[in-house]
Length: 377
Ligand SMILES: Cc1cc2nc3c(=O)[nH]c(=O)nc-3n(C[C@H](O)[C@H](O)[C@H](O)COP(=O)(O)OP(=O)(O)OC[C@H]3O[C@@H](n4cnc5c(N)ncnc54)[C@H](O)[C@@H]3O)c2cc1C
Image 1: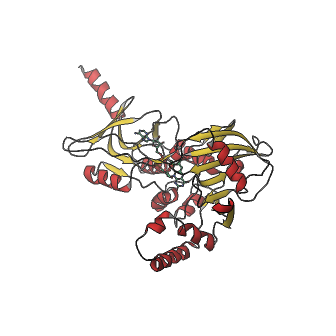
Image 2: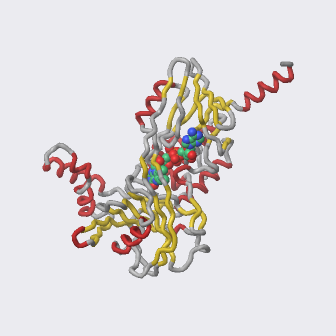
Image 3: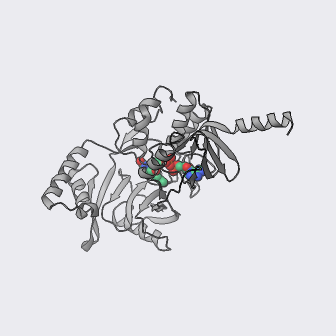
């Protein structure tokens, strides 16, 4: 190799070396990547899909653009809302329009409670198999339950007014203004670490990268992680949460748009997504519902009609409503637990670390104080 070729090679290798690489362009990873870039680090995000957003990436269905891909809401967190409002400029709406539904099986009818109603909350825990399984006696169990309900009484779930579209728009904006590089359509398939744990070599289906620090999240799908001395194969856990979207023609108007089915064998939650459809695209008397189903539910030809019938029974859709279209998505919740990520971090520290992302609002809350001086829309 002559001098020029040597220099070319060095330049090429330098270009592919980053201080920090993130696997996956999920929302929390993007915010952390931007923060790290603002500290002066060279940062790359490698994403296997053709766009950013991960679990929050909207989908195009029924001729509409950017429909929420699944059931979404933010759980209570003490810190995240302030950061979301002040730094990300999100208008947050507390969920008041939400109900719990209990099916009285022998009459095939539902009773409903407002989401924050303590009786509804009490009943939903009471019939939860986890509660019934607990070993302690019924008196202790009930006391624990009442304590839990009391603690939760001031806590509300909430969401961004503009939904996932607004979330993705914001992170795209933040990303665009930063020096973070993003490689889309690039699936990390090999992770090798040098003996001193100073350099991580990453191979994707297309190209290779090097970095001093690799950041993982709960949503990363990881190959075997290897160094000369040890290796670790994260075991993927699959948590299916099938999602179904229904397009329904219906002329009833209800102020409620989120429902929790406390004891339905098929449905866990239903959200009416119509308000998120761009106003100019909305059709009169046409609604889009998304269902989160129980993990064991399989795709079948009659499932969509059954779901439509069930929301009629529950008073969510009118008796005269008609099913116009449907869409099935195989949703899988994150496949790595804290335990796996902690193990990887301990084994390969300091060149691998991770972000806690399995609960969105908490994931933001963990970092918000640190981010607040550097991330602002
Ligand atoms: C459909 C869905 C809805 C959810 N809704 C909520 C909710 O409403 N509220 C809540 O608190 N939590 C929710 N969660 C939990 C969710 O996991 C967190 O909110 C959070 O977004 C997870 O962030 P993440 O970055 O770990 O994963 P994701 O957002 O899933 O992002 C991971 C990204 O990494 C990419 N990727 C994975 N492996 C590789 C690889 N080897 N190479 C390259 N790229 C890779 C993926 O394509 C993906 O884009 C939801 C999860 C899912 C799946």
